[in-house]
Length: 472
Image (tube, rainbow, N blue to C red; front, side, top):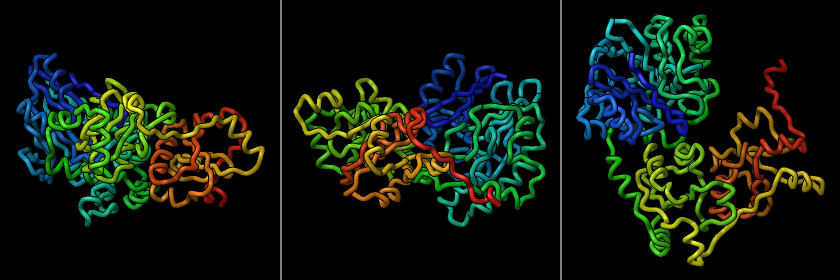
């Protein structure tokens, strides 16, 4: 069966391309649709359908632009109520893609409209399931996201629906089916996803904790809800964009691709409420940057961190990027609904310095320099990693102030004291310091290489966190 996974690692997202006899279908496409159009053209195929497994929270889908450019029909599962032309399928309904069949299996739980699509080949053999966020490799979709959009959908209710969907709709299917999920490790849509991006359903029945047949419904609900952290703030905003509709990616790219001279860029920064995002590498950014800009490097989980740290998708943004990467930045912003980039600095940061404009800097030290400082007396160390990472192991006496909860974390910091900040490798610590520096915290020093460098140096005592329950 001709089904192809199109995986985008920076947001741990998988779309799928299905083609038979000149018909093509795309499942859960990203915002930029040209790669899917080009893929179909390669097969001399026409995109007939865009199948959506649910209203996504972690990205804005490209279904509307595929309908606009290709005339593709948008298909959602039962109960979906999009505010634009689309087919709301019935449970069990079958769609033809060339000689293949796509069967709708309504699997509520992650969201109420969540749907799994069963792929059937030209001989009537069931090949696999495109499971969306219902079933991942090693995990299942978190059931607490829809309640941020519909208040009376509690996480307990959704977890109960998910249990029923898995037990009654998914687990009875054949073991040899291939599971094609919407996300892999690194996505915030689950808590225990594998780095593998496909598997057989039979193996998942053996190894996926959520498919353990011995779990009662009550035990399942407790297991699924344990350990969930609040989702990024952009999630409900992306859901609403996917329900209500959004601007064409073409318009977003045109608006964001305005090359601004230094004078124009400075005027836009002074006359609007735009946030300046500098997307260069952390150890380039720290040597010089536009005052009050924040560093979120493009060579990382860029879109996810923008969505986590900038509260509103409507926020105007000004971009500083390496030459030639401006379009990439604007595209990756649009993937998560940040459609209001209003331009980028022509010539990048070099143009700013050549114009003799004011710059700011962030001081960085090595792990070796950090240990030398500790020999002279007690110092304040901030660990900006997630609480789970910190609890696994951390530098003795370091304070945990996670980047993903920056507003809470900054309350732990005294502006009058000096702190040495690290994350795992240096990406998040620079983001952390740049945000706080823009808010008036000027005594933060970055530790180059982060915890990885600290641990590798064998210069610090690292402690493992012991959960109290293990002591009982």
